[in-house]
Length: 214
Image 1: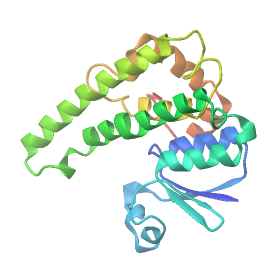
Image 2: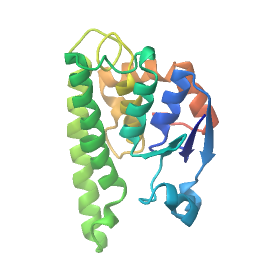
Image 3: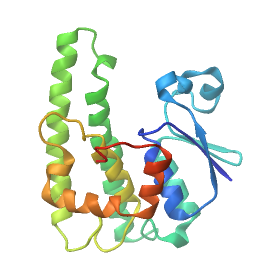
C-alpha cells in the first residue's frame, strides 16, 4: 500500500487527488507544515529537503510532486492519466507537466516565500510583487492553452494528470490581490468541472479545505 506524507492544502494535494482518481488503496500520513512536522529528524530521513510531499511505495521513497505523480501514472498506466509512452501526446504532456512544476510552481513558491532569497523587508515585498506579475503572465498562457481546443480538459477531451496538477497551482492564487486564476474565463469553466469531480470533493473534505475553494 502506498503511503503519502501530506499536509493540507500544500503540494501534496496533487498526488492525493491522483490516488483517489486511480482508486488505489493508500495511507495518508499527516506531516503538518503548520507544526513543522516536515522538519523533524524522522521525516528528514525520508525527505532530506524537508518538503511535502513524500511517497513511500514499498522500498521506494519518492519526493518532488511531479515525480510522485508520474510514478503513480506509470504504475497504473491502464487508467490512462498520461498518454501512452512514445506518442506525440506523451511529449506534449511532458512539456506541460514540467512547465507547471518548473515554471508556474517555482514562480508561486517565489511569491509565497520571498524571504528565502532576501533579508530586507522591502526587497522581499518587491520580489513578491514581481513574482505575482510573473504568475499572472503564466496564467495568461494557461488560459490560451484552455482556449486552444474544444475539449473540457487540459489536453483536450481526455482528463489527465495535467488537470490535477494545474488545478492545485491555480488554487494557490485564490488569495492574490487583484486577478486570480478563477478570473480567467476558460480557466474558470475548467475549474468548475474539476470541483465537480468526486475525487476532488473527497480530498477537499478530507483536508478540510475551506472557501475560496480555488
